[in-house]
Length: 388
Ligand code: PLP
Image (spheres, protein in one colour):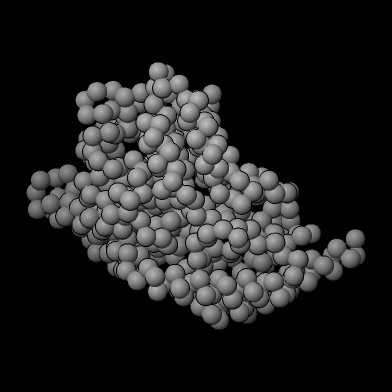
């Protein structure tokens, strides 16, 4: 008997939205290479450039500042480098400062050797410690090179919104550069490159209901740019060589345009469902710990710990009941390690956390079913605990 599955793992990846699917199908029919000068090439180029405008619009950037990559991870590896150019002059970055709760794509430090990476701690609330950032940058030796700081706008596990505008002021006052991973913020918070004060922004199509395999590095201007990661035929103005994935980029653009519309109404609807979910969880298991409840979170994410239930076991239990969620961040091996985010927040990371994340097509019926499943899993956990 087939049973309805409930997908509450939108922070891992969002199902493709219909406008993105249609744009991709159209683009797949185009035979040309966007670098070719003939009519077929120009048609493909037009699709790529339209998508560039749509992505730029989502984050209030200049389309010329959008560089398409194949993943946010690639965009991070492009921008996290000691080697930049300011116009024609080389500009050297001596140290990378990354928050302790960054996604591994950023936390690994891209092209920086490990001994040139410093972690910025977070407070118990799950918010980056700005006083620590100030102290670290005050101690930075400017004579060795510039400081590059990477702070995410929204944490993928907790959904907690990070004070990136304040961080930008601190970074700027110390003459440093700021990279903001906006992968989980895009489509969930209003984004404006100028207001944010970031030098670079990282986006990923598949988190905004676009396809997997397209992403972007967005820069503030075009003067300060990282040394290319992939060299070759000069595509993306030499910043990222390789023939563009036209269909994926078309889907990215369409998804960006879709997400740019009706943000407030979408957040209100999703937030109401998330609150209903969390109330249902608290009613079913009053000992559930919901992380980040006291600070600003995006509307779609609920990260919780059920005492006595290991995240890894919980994930399987929910999956067997027909509910897809994540134990912390999805990692490629499918294995669940201790959550570095919970550890950074000073929480007991051994039990781990489970994450339910909602999206624009999540329904009230799905949430009610999810609450029922949660109640069953939580009750079984208690029985197991009593038997032990
Ligand atoms: N940054 C954050 C906050 C993420 O959640 C993810 C994906 O989970 C990434 C970066 C990496 O994105 P991509 O899958 O496009 O490499």
